[in-house]
Image 1 (cartoon, rainbow, N blue to C red):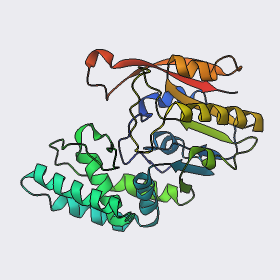
Image 2 (image 1 turned 45 degrees about the vertical axis):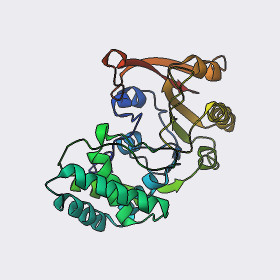
Image 3 (image 1 turned 90 degrees about the vertical axis):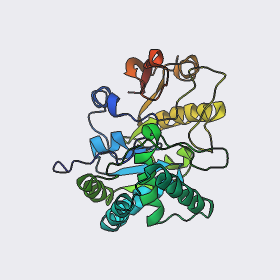
Image 4 (image 1 turned 90 degrees about the horizontal axis):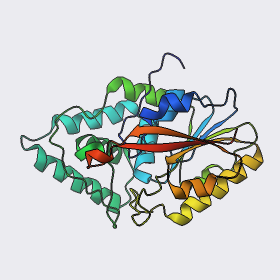
Length: 277
């Protein structure tokens, strides 16, 4: 796998690119299968390129993009390059027309190659590269005034080549870890717990509420009992420490830059990396 230089093809909220060194130095030395129930942009998967991997996310449009790039990388590149090439002089108007078309396809549940190309295009041309939907599940992020290429050909081809050997599924995190057993490694980049307990913003319309965090902590305990190696990352909050503290897990606090916070003074934060080994 060493000749591949796979990298994330979309930006994702809570992406783990900047934590990669800290994650890699805490990896188990040896493991069998790799599970990532919240794959998001895939920064960790594409850095490690594990041989027997299962990736999952609840975001259907995201998983559709992974699947389309896996099975038809050339056709995907053709479609996304066409969207770039046909951009009107008024980029903003063009972006909003494509966003509307994307949302229309989402409403009709048309998970196809065209949706994957639109998904990557709007991710590259939306403000902050942040995927966010409203209560109806419609993508609602404004334009970022960029006219750059939406996809890097080498990255897409390398990602596609790597994904050929990966199990790609879409659904609940608990189901995704159903077959994880002793000696497998489960990397859990769960949706962030709110820094302010009264605010619970989520970037999927399914939402990830307090109950979801409790259910995930229970799964972490279950996977530990099964003999899986588990690593989980999240904000360093009281709730996360309550859910995972006093159980013998190793909790390391690391500093991170927060790119998505609009208030610059809040851009340095703390995250935890929790390991059961």
